[in-house]
Length: 159
Length: 241
Image (cartoon, rainbow over all chains, first blue to last red; front, top):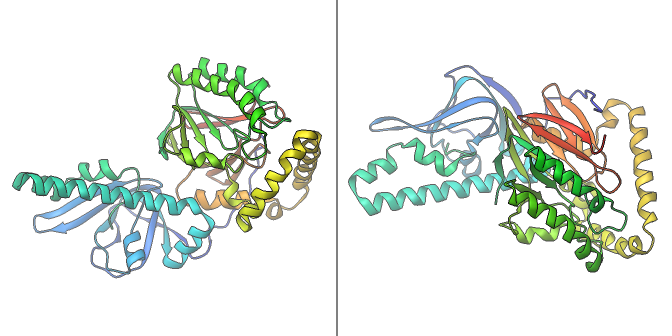
């Protein structure tokens, strides 16, 4: 009912849609770049290097976002992100983020909610680690992605 | 507070304006709630369900009781009832955590089937509301007593809006695109497959991009329309048609 098509331009401010091939790196831990990403299609794996190898922090899907820490703090990437299958992401510079926050105010709410969830998750892992010693410490900080995801999902990551 | 939710069968209505002397919602919603119950749907009221800003408390209380009983019955039968806050019921933001079994929220990100759907009232994109929210609220409040004594004032406004809306198809595609379409496009760009607004009182179902839809639930002030979500399939329907 009432269906009609209105064409739209993809260019909007400094937001840019980019497609990544399977296993292609979207951002790399330690690099200095100031963009955040919103997944429009496909899935993205977030991981971090450690002394014991690669730790998977989360697998994110459509609508989830990552990379905001580098935009907000201006610090190097804290983790890497890699496409799982073909993935399309919206790349936002700091300027684009500010434009979006003005035009899409609920995005700010979602961002705060994700960050709040992340603090809660880290608090829980800290308590687990400090309260129970060795084994729990490993469970909390050795890349137990399930624990991380159950606290943070749906949404954000820690890139 | 629920923001992200998975819903396979959901009915979305908006702009009931229960308590507005011109609203027919209280008379028609009973059967709609029965329809929701029979179909095992959950219910989302997408803003301006209750006319808190303009109605007199006595009429709001009287009219609300019937609707709240219907909602209570749905909840008792196992349905989830979600309530997205609009501009005429913005006071309900004080009940964001829980209100007698109704989940009150500023907006919803709904996953249904393989679709990701944003449900939001839409007043945050209304230029008048954005430019001067206090003046907007004051003018809306001021119109309340006028509506009470002369409910037909609302009819005049409604006719004007309907006429204005009918003239829009004469415009070019670019000029047809309203601020709500632009807002919906912003949301679609960040991973939503569809956006459902209310607020404008004009039911719409438009493909804004080849893969992204904008729907508007319309209003129940006169007649009624709603969006049915069933396993990711979305249909804009008129109640009783």
